[in-house]
Image 1 (cartoon, rainbow, N blue to C red):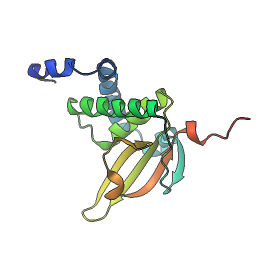
Image 2 (image 1 turned 90 degrees about the horizontal axis):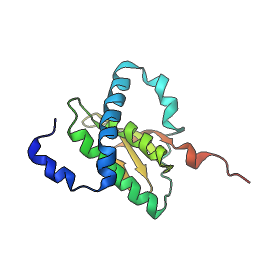
Image 3 (image 1 turned 180 degrees about the vertical axis):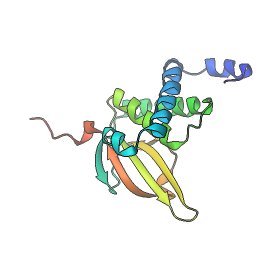
Image 4 (image 1 turned 30 degrees about the vertical axis):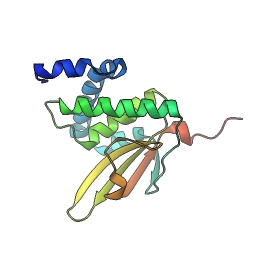
Length: 156
């Protein structure tokens, strides 16, 4: 629950962020529930086109870049106020869904680091790290999914 003294700061945010704050919060909860109750193999096909360990980040336009940055801020803000754990995985799934909603090409990455062992998920769109921060430097990519927007064959 958000402390009341933070409400004025929240109200100064752009309208776009205010509009998406509650839906992002709900999506984080939905994705957390999915992660906890359904085996990964059943919902992984919905992540996008699997590229294996290849690291592919689609290029996006300046308008899409601004939108991806705004969506990342919304997800980070919503994640701070969930009563459940909203770590990198539900944030990445939420980002993937919202980027697809706006037809912004994305890549969803899963990575590991060995010492100390840690797993991580993050989403990138163009030069924007929508969720997960600068993860390429710390984590080895073990799986990459990219949006169907960017991987479908060109139409004549």
